[in-house]
Image 1 (cartoon, rainbow, N blue to C red):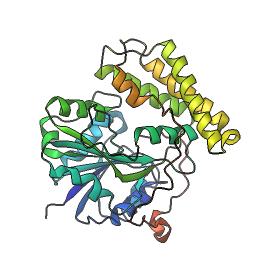
Image 2: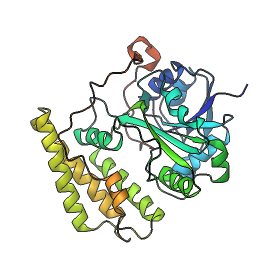
Image 3: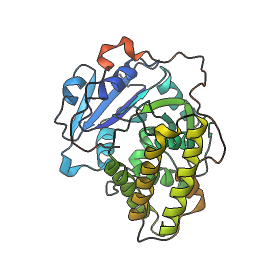
Image 4: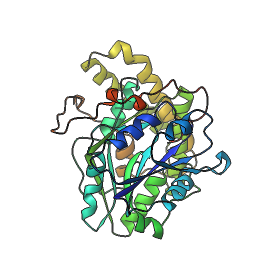
Length: 331
């Protein structure tokens, strides 16, 4: 039978997280789902854990990997009209995650939806601030810019058939596809109720490389854009200051001081290195990607919903093992 949706997961050495995500999928209110895992050469227990769940595995060699190529290979196997994409190191908070992220597709003009992301207790303070900025509580029924994130998003497969993901980009294949969709007159919808926890366990060098890679992709998508040394200094200063102010407000200043300064420096140094050879950033996308809230808004950790969250502690298959040493994270 045709599933209600297909879910494509990109993975590489994700034994610490994949069981929790697949357990979360099994607890959804939408049960008729096709789960496709695109594995790019995992050497840990990822594939052993996946065998405990009804998952179709697609293999791609590390040499052939790109974010766009792995998604295209996964979506090629999708049988449903709507395809949900999830990073292997996210997991849904509520059992209506799929229901909420698919709901806007009742309007035919909607091409893409994406949901809320937030960190966990092990996330860097600055990364939690970024998640709050990028993924607020307020929905965007038809946003004006193409920002989105394939760690927690969904698209119409029919539109993907017209325009697959760009396999040459080093990242931001989601932004590139969203821009194309908007240029064709389609809409992008942000759905905060479709909430996931996104776990990044990166070294400082990993954070630098992630933002450098995304900046290189952004420059490829928008060749006229640039990010100069003054942008680096200004945005590091402004974002670090706002993070420190929020940390003080939350009584986490001493605990988070070094992490905030280091994270923001690696973020914007990586961005600077990626943009060294292009033109100026548009204000709208600059604001969407980099600028923090200028208010003393508190975290939304106390936000209440009528839907009870998934109790992962009741499902032993969801418990993560120790992360494998080495190996880059994808997504």
